[in-house]
Length: 306
Image (cartoon, rainbow, N blue to C red; front, side, top):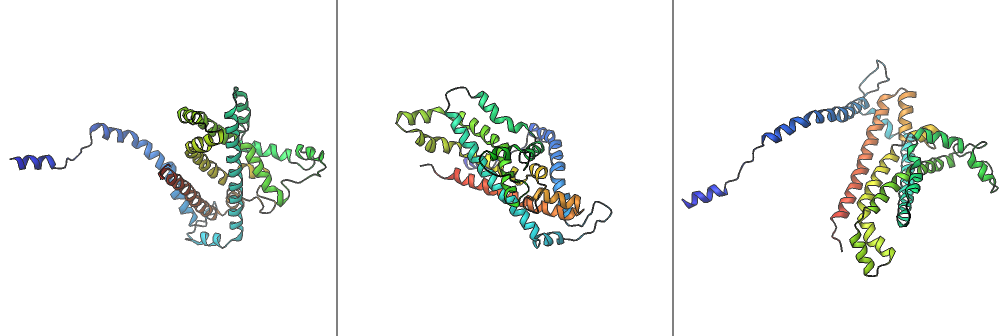
């Protein structure tokens, strides 16, 4: 008798979904269907087109992996990838460093910083194409204000966007002016939201400002910093508007990035299959970078704190 009772107690219980869980699934099903159509369908369609030589018209021949083979053997494609990587690394590094530094310095101020924060946020209120046109006027070799100010220091006029050596640094500088405020806003919010107890305890123990920042504040801000880094890295890799509005990818291929290359391939040369192949490769690269940064963040979080 007791054995039967014990067996009945030890028997695994099968959980049944309640009516509330089933009804909740039917409520979110339309949302999942919309997301699948708007996210998965374009991916599948784009990959399918990348296997053809579609020219926006009736010509739609299946060519398999020929577009990918042509890209990997095309020196121009590798130049475009290199330009995109150079821009992304330079712009992201400067924006993260400068935005984080500004956030730390503003956080130290004892006065109200509402006006200062509003002024630093102004560039974010301007669209990318407007920023490109404004910078094109400012960097004009004859009428631009930048060359006018440089003349006071004995510097001659420089064709910032017209020379291969200065075109990419000029675009990086414009993007830094435009997007550093994003890093500043997020990191300042993170600094303002830090817990006060560990900081006050360290001050009581006699820790200086540098020790408090490096040992307490920075570790607490690291997850947020990694998140901002991922966002800015992906955004800079997808740059289009400021390049298209300033140099159009020139002079030559000096500033040609993936997005402008795809635009030119698809709309100027009517090679839709090749353009889609570029986007498939580039999407895989962006996904790999995102997973790599996320893995780095997970590894740091899993390490035991000393």
